[in-house]
Image (cartoon, rainbow, N blue to C red; front, side, top):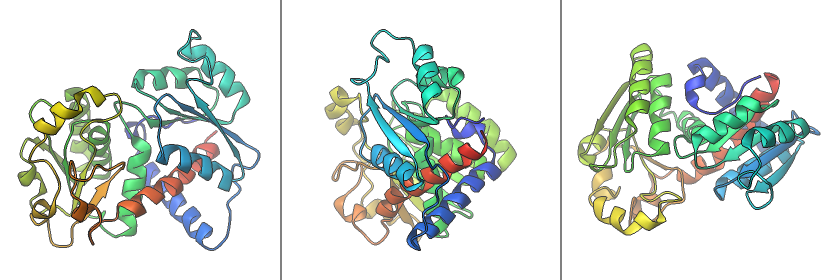
Length: 306
C-alpha cells in the first residue's frame, strides 16, 4: 500500500506512470468512456482548510470513477475536538477505501497515514501541495513544455514553492525561485531538494530578484501572497511583495512563447496582473481542470497498489 503525502516518496517513473494514467482517463472521458476503477468504493475527504478546486475535483473525480465521496469538515467529525488523530485514522480507514486530507500541519497528515489501513492523499498542507504539482506537470506535458523546462517561481516561499522544488528535483528540470527577503523557502526542504537534484541533474536556485529568475524562463508561475491562515499578514505582505507581481513587463523577460501557471485562486493586481492571467500565455484554467484528471489518475494508481 502507498500513501501520497509528498512527491519525495515517488520516483520519476512513478510520477510519469500516474500522469500517463491521468492523460488516458482524460482522453477516455472526452470520448464518453467512464473508467469505473473505483466502483463501489468510498473516498473520505477531510477538510480543515476549505477549498474550491480540491473539493470539486476529488468529489467529481471519485464519482466519475464509480465511487462515492464523503465531505468531512472539522465541524462534522471529532478530529481536533478531543479525539486523537490515530483514533480517527483507525476508524475512518476501517470504513472507507481511501482518504484525502486538506489541513494546516503536515505532521497531522503523516500521523494519520501511519495509522491508516488505506491510502492517504495529501490534498494540501502548509508544507506541501503535491496534487497540484501533478496537475501542473500534466499540463506542461500536454503543451509540450516539460522537456528542458526552465521554470521561474515568483512569490512566497510556501507549500507551492516547496512542491515545485521537489518536482524539479525528481524530473530534472531547471527551477529558479525568487522570493522577497524574509519570505524564503524552508531551508531543510531546500537541502533535501538539492540532494535529489544531484541525482536527476536538476538545477535549483533561489534568489530575491524576480527579474533575474524570469529572464529566459519557459514557464513563469506564482501563488497568492497571503495563504489561508495568513490573513492578518495580508497588508504587510502586499507592501513586502512590491515588485513581485507577474505582469506583462515581467513576462517580456521570459523566453518568447513562455507560459504562465497559477494554482488559483488568483488575486488580480497583486501576484499577477489581469492582462497576464487572461492573456494568450495563460493556461491556468486548463491547469485547474487537470486537477480533476491528475487526481483521478492518482487514485486509480494508488488503488492498484493496495
